[in-house]
Image (cartoon, rainbow over all chains, first blue to last red; front, side, top):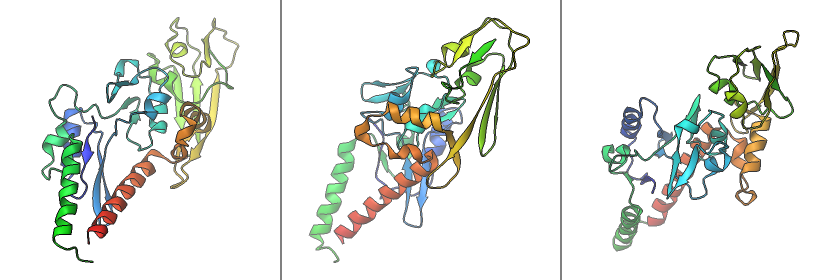
Length: 145
Length: 133
């Protein structure tokens, strides 16, 4: 499981950042990036299948737990290797590492339940379904060329 | 006190993070990271145990020995130039990742990686919109 983003819907309000910080004691794991005037893109942990952060972690603090990349704070020494290994720059280290835990213990990640634009979801099918209907609508309207 | 093998140390600061007495002093500038182990009298070997490189050993205190110190030049990001890691740390990460991934991103700082990911996602969205007309 991961949080999927439909950036066509993101309005750049940064509510996800705030919600994440509130749940994680002031240290958030989402960053909304603005690309010119085009788009705002929340950058998340992908919970990669072959997680580079877990491969680089020597103490076993970062590890795969089902389809989640989990983090055991007790084992972390703050070496920062995970931070250097993550291809997306979404594992942070400030003395110890911190990253998205998909809001463990909550039914849904708080960024997903907070997003006012419904741009975030843990359901990939929902996003691909929306993408397909957008394409279908474009074909039905004849496109603009 | 602690003995350091400077050939093994990667400059990651694990030891300094875990030391309960703050006996391992880090100083960092834009160009360089310096780590100094104070002549500690503790029997504690937490830093030895938690060193990812196995570079530390607990040895009996020797008042005449100088306090061990290592320094590392910091490597700059290939995109923005800002220094972000030591070379041995980057080599270690590259060695830990499967070759098939060709981990070029390791030479780019985490901030620029996030920016690159945002630009890639935007590019995909713009392309999809163009396709739809």
